[in-house]
Image (cartoon, rainbow, N blue to C red):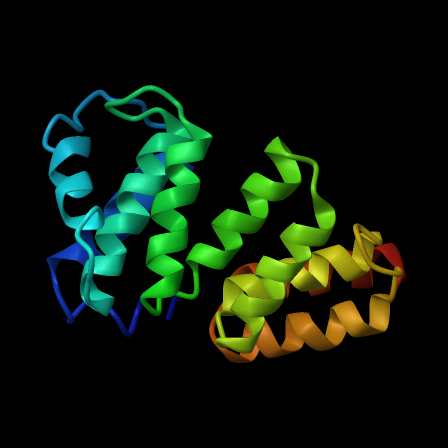
Length: 175
């Protein structure tokens, strides 16, 4: 069962989020995604208070701004929506915040701070990503055994990519 396997039953936000993530990972552009209106998501995310379920809407808006689907790429807006999602209990948002800090701002210290918040909240994607940081020595002292420990934890939580990281490092002989 994947990262979102237990969540699909909760509501349509999660289904839409999973669909958008799938489309992004498969290299989709705005073709066939006209029903994803950034304005409708922004309406929810700019409210003064949102629910945990609505935090997935903020994740969608952030992903749309990161990827440029039905809107221009805007990392600042994406960051605002990911922060709102994280503030309202969506731990996966910390992974995206870390991505922006690392890849856009080259701020590894802040990226690690976000990853560690995601790890503390128990998000398996954050756990996996922190494992990658330890394996590569990105922003931390390189420690392949700490990486292995984190990947095992993420794998135990159902995050399959962690298993691939373990396999790759085992094949390289680094574990």
